[in-house]
Image 1 (cartoon, rainbow, N blue to C red):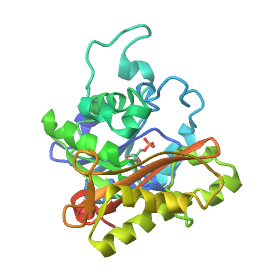
Image 2 (cartoon, rainbow, N blue to C red):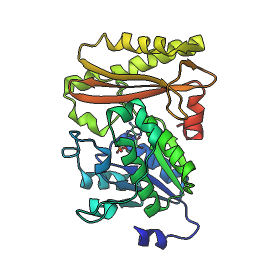
Image 3 (cartoon, rainbow, N blue to C red):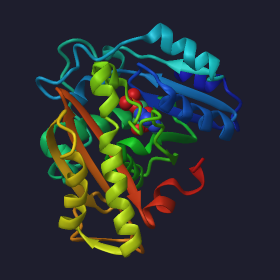
Length: 289
Ligand code: AMP
């Protein structure tokens, strides 16, 4: 990877899209932006073991590298970096001394439910940035907490990369595309768009009213989710600031914020979010397509 990087013209700009593979149109959209806005587009495919908790789906996470490479070729991506575990974490049995610990993120919903998740992400993204040394890097709004985390990571550790956050790509039902959607049965898939419908319904009320207490926002989301019996669990509904993902008492249009939620449809976990008010321009800015 380093040799490839050195082989590029010194002034060439490189747009980088980190992924865990099992690619879909959401990932491809990120690579389109990377290609349009840079001389060279590069994607990585690495199923990062440290962002899976005990009992999560690391072992069965879909791995489709050959197909991924084909899709990336079709999307005119110039280079694919597909390291193995040893490349990133050292030889079998090696215990790394250093990692990146984004402590406040462990206390927000997603971090409480999946301990080590954000530390795993912050650490692997730092490693990838150090290896690839991109000019810009592209992330999806779908993982909004990840966007806020990477923003802080780059700022706090002075990493010389510009960040671009790209709007979520959805199925026609509204369901956010995700590699994990493969776990849904056809029937589950046909109803899983309910999460986006519910988030949009709450956003619509807030947009009309201008401001809304978080309990009312959550109730508006819940009211829609309760209409679908295949929603087996609502893990959380969170109303938070898009800047640091800390909970807000009130959502208002001028300041902006995020409504995000994780639910289970059958056994499959679906996460999604909508940006409200000023958060849209703050997060998506000129990257909006
Ligand atoms: P993953 O392979 O799930 O780690 O995702 C790699 C990148 O693609 C992350 O920045 C995700 O936020 C982004 N991504 C995943 N799904 C979507 C989607 N439906 N729309 C836009 N970006 C996405």
